[in-house]
Length: 521
Image 1 (cartoon, rainbow, N blue to C red):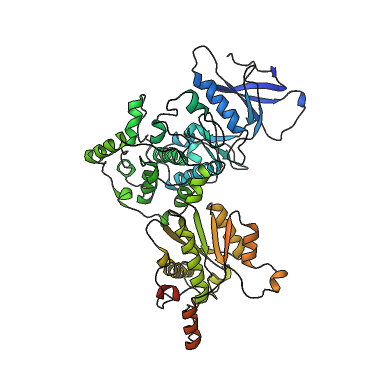
Image 2 (image 1 turned 90 degrees about the vertical axis):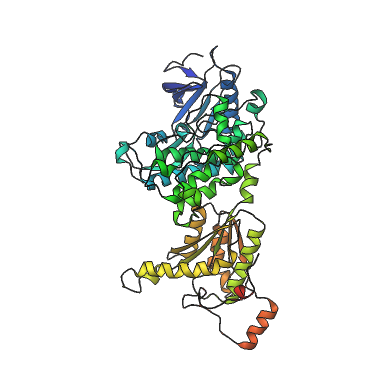
């Protein structure tokens, strides 16, 4: 198909300049002809290449993109405008988004600061998670397909002038190789071969398994590896045999190529690049969580090792891969629901044994039904608390004190298969701080105590639990305090005061009923 002429009109769209001419499509700036409509945003038209020498995958992938683009919503994908008749003139009109692709940072002077790498990784993971929540998997994530919006008011700067505030949310582009759980997989039906970009394709895609959200996690891992080292972890294989090697081969540890790379970041990158999908991050949300909280990452030998994997290990993996039967991919939303991020809000003061016990019991039940879930224990202290003293480093000492107490409370919940992290927030608005944390970390379930005092007052004044329950973007479990009958009876007879520190969280030196009863599972 010939290039469209600038200034020509097509189905009510006025064609502008060609802004991209690739191997599979041409992209043009377009506007509505005669100013008949104003969508409120700039637009671009994508027209597939259909010359005699172009492959069938061009038109098939265009069909896939038209099918999927129309049902995707949110800030991490371009807005759909219109699609042309495939038999007459195929085209796709969508929102044009200004910004830079990830390639811009890969072309910048190396090495990139760890803070920039982390920020880029979090943005990519959150965009992928938003896509997976809509039961779609991209399957062709690479630097050219990940765009970062310009932050409001930021001018275009040179790569060397980039700061953490120069870019905003990540936007995913080009859904021609994507898979949606609710639509037929045209690529699998018509092409019957592995499709994807060789440098970033996941091992399961190589053998024809499509639709697994962990395939996008693998691709993000490849891009993180590039950002850290300036190299591709598996090179650029041009043959099927070359791509199959990632089913059993590990890349060179990033710390061997960059000595100043922190172990926690290597741990994250190499976990994304595990050959078996089950050993990677089970969701992009969990990947974003670890990148956002590096001090909470559990570093294993995977993060500290600087030597390549032995031939013996690779040989064992090769034998295993040769006889492996790959299962159909899980529905993305089902996969996410099985490995949620569970957040428990622990009061910083006025917390009785009954409250602390009941919260722990409710969390244990939630984790028990969700193997692989991530637990985030959060307490919010008021801003005024750290302003009551002027001692040097008092704020750090205050946070450390409450963090220690939070770890003590969560210790009985620390079981194999669940990762637990503790966070002390400071805010004058407890409900808003909890909601912001839940939104920023893609929390799936919030567990918190239900206010049992002032029930009549709650009809007129909303308490913190009510505010959180009303505005939370996820499930909220409000827990009413209770203790086992025999322990409660003994408590009344003894009339012993609850073991609390002045702040309300449990005193590490004194036992709680939950500790006396053993781990709650």
